[in-house]
Image 1: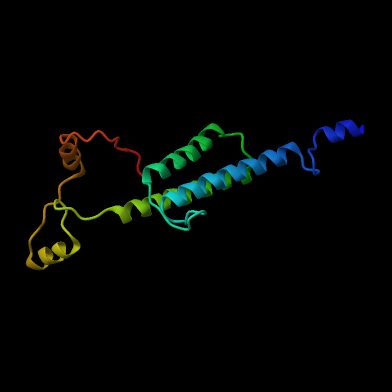
Image 2: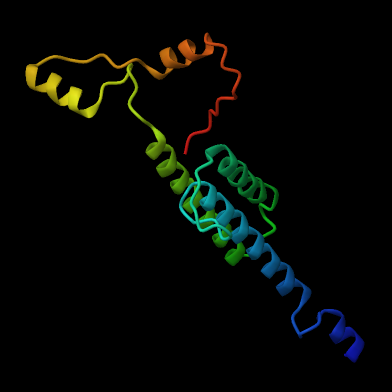
Length: 151
């Protein structure tokens, strides 16, 4: 084989184009994951050192990772597929944790103390269903989009 043919598959530094694109893909997945984790309050902002929580912003990065998984199905090597799946699992779990941390008891939902008192007294507290809560908030003119995807 001639040197020209051997060099055609190599980039600067002796790595193949496939290795280079694999490294770029891995970097993209890691960057998207870090951005999602930062917006979920799990990592500090690199510039300020402060943590922030923006579930909608994090959701965008998670959606982008899901899109990557869907659009690259069948085109990834096993290591790339595992990397993407592992990072998606991590951000899904972090999203659920962050969403649960942000849930505060409201007047319609009994606090854990109220549940304990009712249980001791033999009473039952009625907790409104999610459908009732959605219909109540829909009537209040809330124009924000409601996410239906659950993790």
